[in-house]
Length: 234
Image (cartoon, rainbow, N blue to C red; front, side, top):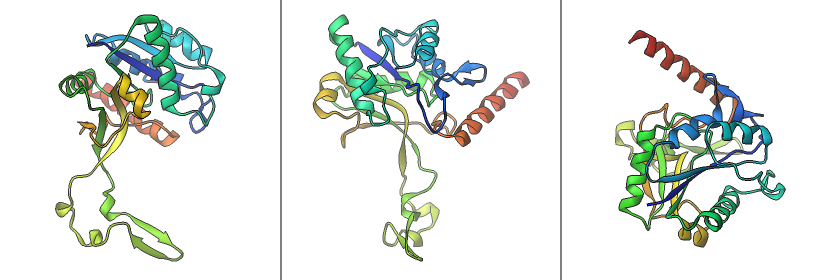
């Protein structure tokens, strides 16, 4: 099994400028994802796709492959993650031969564990024709969600508002930490997701943190500080 780990890190992030190399616990954010992909036998290489020379240098120093800077047309706000992923996949297979799957590790999920990566790959090995996507328990249940219409509220699901919490079915959300799909399926479907996707359930709230805003960053810093205090107490 040969799996390419791809980390996508654009330089011009808007909501949290410079987040990919911002220090979290003294370590650039992107390095957290590079480190977690190391020493996983099925991962043949860790490739970083970026348009930013500073990100590229940090990634190389951390041990990742950064063979080029991303083309300008793939570094815009309108460029999609699937286009970026396919660009990296096509280049890698031209240079290094075919791979079995592309694993997308977004740098905004710094707390995913190596054990979780291994578990996701094991799921993929058992079901090679199905993508594997990580999910976390939903903090706000969809059956309790409403929409605002003028000055009124309307439930998204009829009858859901009358259910007690213990009566609600389990609900999960994509957390962005792990996407793995067979190369040819990714090319054919142009998506890491399908209705047949295998769920990689991440129950630990910390591991499922996805940093997209300043508030998310504050939560991540609090998690780092809590873990540091816990380590000193042992």
